[in-house]
Length: 285
Ligand code: HEM
Image (cartoon, rainbow, N blue to C red; front, side, top):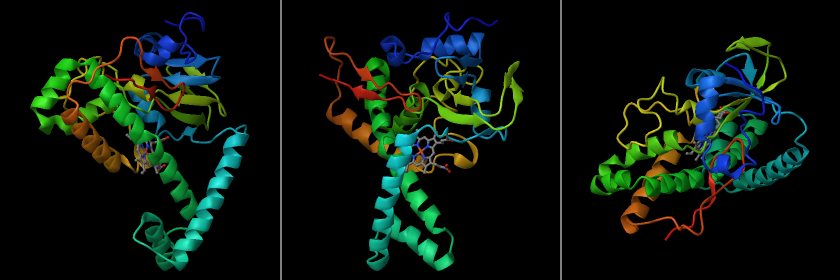
């Protein structure tokens, strides 16, 4: 079944969708899993298999449309910053990641100078907002599922599977962006080279064809093959670090403040972003 753009929209300007996009994801998965969004001028993929494949499919690439002028100049500034820092570390190495990357560059020529700068930028971007959002989303999910929170307090050994379930149930990777490289068909639709695709990770993570009781938050879920860190050669480089940080932060927080609650008169505010899902504010009592 298909439907018109009006009847089913994934519109992040709507605060209700920002706060709970999952009902729209469920309809998209069911009714139009390869959905053209005129507002976003992009395809939205919502089924687990399509989302997973979008990360590795040769007919989709990671190109970025060149209209992002502000992003370009910001990236240039950041690259200049790192070039200066690299020059300093070259003269005076210390026990940090940049000095080690420089050693790999200078000793084995494992990295070109540009790759060295790009790696620094990628790590700063990748590690900056992600873990913050993981912690916020985790606290939000546990507050909203008191029985799961009580279980975690009683059984701290479940912290690892709790983090995995937060990553699946309300992960911070709302979507991955891709550009169609070659014309191809998907789910009966024609995707044309140059068009934009959003592989909706959080929708794939609730696909009932992959997860038992996909809509339930279950901190003991196993297996839990969520797509939140991506797939294939671009699989998140910081996944282990993020998991560790998430475990330490949530474990400490939940032990120190076991009865955190939301404030009815001051509800959480979600960010308005396609790629990242996170809380702008999470007032708690
Ligand atoms: C819970 C936290 C995190 C999540 C959910 C996450 C998610 C992701 C995803 C989905 C990708 C693949 C993007 C794509 O294929 O388009 C990715 C790539 C990447 N992430 Fe993370 N990330 C997290 C934390 C981090 C941290 C802490 C770092 C670094 C300190 C990091 C560094 C990177 C890098 C460098 C890449 C690019 C890998 C490549 O292209 O080969 N990430 N991440």
